[in-house]
Length: 585
Image (tube, rainbow, N blue to C red; front, side, top):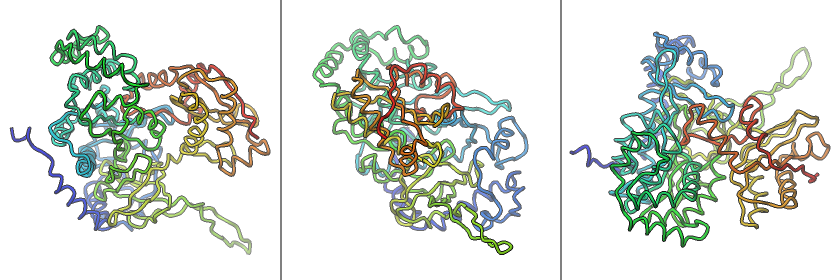
């Protein structure tokens, strides 16, 4: 009984965080020492010539910076069941599959108990700060979370998405209960074999417990928006289920039907109440607080590629606060959102110095080193050297390097962050973009953020007609010379050709990178092309990734589709309804 009533000691967590961040440099040295002492016998580190040294200086001198491609042979051997310690002393028993939306195929990443513990530490820390601002108690959470099946690798290791590995871990549910954030849906719904059926049942469970729901959450903002877009389509059917106490025939899996039967009882009064609430809403504005009157906040990752969904989420949320969840990836965690009252666009993440060892590559222009050889001066372009956690500078941008307890050493995460300030001696980071997600043809360099800003600017032209861009992506078309940018839009309704031509020109003008503008002016880059796709196209892309074993809670729309990601490119190109070329230059 004690375990059931256990509640997180928020004040102790906050106190521990303050102590740790006041001494971030020493905590980092101790963390690296722990990682290297624990795994020094592993083949990878043995080959580096560290000779049991654990100090940062020796570590950086001996161990090279790597990408996933460098570590892939080692991880593959682990997945294939190699017996000897390869990356870690303890055997890796689980493999995480990254979302795979960038290159079109998921990557294998080691997952172990230590990584699960750092996940829970991040969850607990951010909850402590969140609960100080927006206290919740004795309630339930409407969590749009989904877990795909775990498969097995050749060597017999469990393999699943990072979220699946977390949700299926026995510690996860216990942690949610302690944080008073227990999901209102039964496990059979979360682990259901069909995402569409699970989503319907999540909505139904939320309505059944509508007065007890204190927070609405998912891993990504996209999943929350998708859930309430779905609600718009199925709300009358949900009301029928509640009125009759009988689950719709669209739910076909026996385990899910059986679990829902225990919750669903005839309740005509509730059905009438929901119908009344829905009928008086204007274009579904404020849907979430209308359905869940005691909701305190909406929670999920809302930065980076999720920012485009904020406008729609705010429409559903009205005055309910949106709080962006923590900063991490399939490879490991980095920081917690300790300023939950900030809007998602301003969210920063304080790095927890004890969950891994962190380095940062400055993203200033590459340093040119003068080299004198036989009397001739030449220039060698070199990448700046990484700096430590406490050596970063406010206002500067960096690429993140992580060394984790799960066998990744000096691993280039590929994320670009900006240092916004410090909490005690640990930096607060703002996520900027993925470094390798770039629209580029020659000297132009446009990031995911640049694309997002261009889309937001052009979308204002259709907002005047009460329409919106549901989702978007892009591609560089070099099949003809000169190459040009292609932007794919899915729009919520019909827009005139005249307005769409304007949107196309606006997109072209909104890429302000000097290399792009100068190249456009001399036609080294061709006119931007806007391709409007049929409604439901991006849902087909989601279904494609679900078919590959992804889960919707980990899904991110690919913002820049590489040529290697030919299946997604084919879906986009096969569903083009109209296309326009810019006349802006």
